[in-house]
Image (cartoon, rainbow, N blue to C red):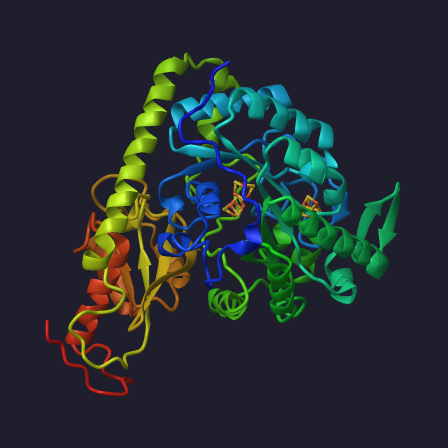
Length: 502
Ligand code: CLF
Ligand code: SF4
């Protein structure tokens, strides 16, 4: 079998707690640069653990784990585990052998794929034979692909040694609470010691296992990401405490995700009308948690069989029947992987060197620092540049730009407005929905945009901008902010008078 020796195998960190103290080291390369070398090596090409990496590197999931050992009120067992997936999504279940075959095929066809994760469709650790058989084969046959797993944590303490044995150095635990009272509102039962334990008792067992598992992983130098589902009115305020505690215990990253609850998904919350958070509420909670914790803000709530860059879904290209028909020259594919990875490393290094001169953290030449921040949406297909037509965007990345600089704050999903061609077609209601999804944004940057959406965006108070095509996102966002200041568009509410001297 081939070996994917492309980038050096991640080194084991002695102590991940020694790492970062910045507010969001899952966010930018600048923040990665503060990390110890051993941890930087682990995260620099992991698209979930590094915001910068997610523009360049892809992950894939193999859906080998059907069973689950708990019940979450936001989950319908017909679908993938909603702790990392969008509800309502069903994945093709694979055997471990099929999963390995698929991973090899994806590695050969998508050279940017650096991470293999198991995230469902149930709980990976409630299916230990299938999960560990897959990891065992992959750690032998493709040692340079990072292995990653996501779990609800109930079976975690018993699995830690085996995770360490297979070099799995990225583990996600979904922790929605540290208080059984709140837990009982999220988890109706857990399956523990061959019986179903309900309510507060069950929640207490789950919480204890999650915390114990977290401590054991940290003690072994395994990087832990904590996912939390934000459920307004249930655990939203409480998640600040969760964030503080998991940080204290050595978790590397906290990913607060919005609850998605629709009646048609058939989940308890969906049927009961429990709402999910608005983008502004999610951002406020993430900001509040960021004081204590490194926050992930680029999660896409992937499917259990997701393939590709975060935000794109190439799973349909790699179904079992399609893989069977592929004629892959693994030798050539591996050389291509090596070339692609070297080119990405070169590009990132060049970007890093260029930053002090070309990448201002605040508008140059603006002498008064009192203008309000602005949210801008960006259409991109990756690579850290503005390179997507407005009508082709399935999502927009949202950046906040202010006098202190540019920060990535999340993404907004949209429906595909334009199905192809040079112009945006009709589909007005889709456009209207997309404009609603951009609520709060004042500018949308894209490579190109049709006449009709331009007009409707303007009417909605969102300024379309196609002048920065192929430019690095953060530079373009800052340039537009500066223009807004210079044009007097931010004068209202500005505390002082700004002078543009550049
Ligand atoms: Fe997959 Fe999760 Fe590993 Fe990433 S996803 S198992 S850590 S490789 Fe990533 Fe997807 Fe969000 Fe998960 S964007 S849902 S956080
Ligand atoms: Fe569903 Fe995942 Fe919760 Fe299990 S852990 S009930 S699969 S959301």
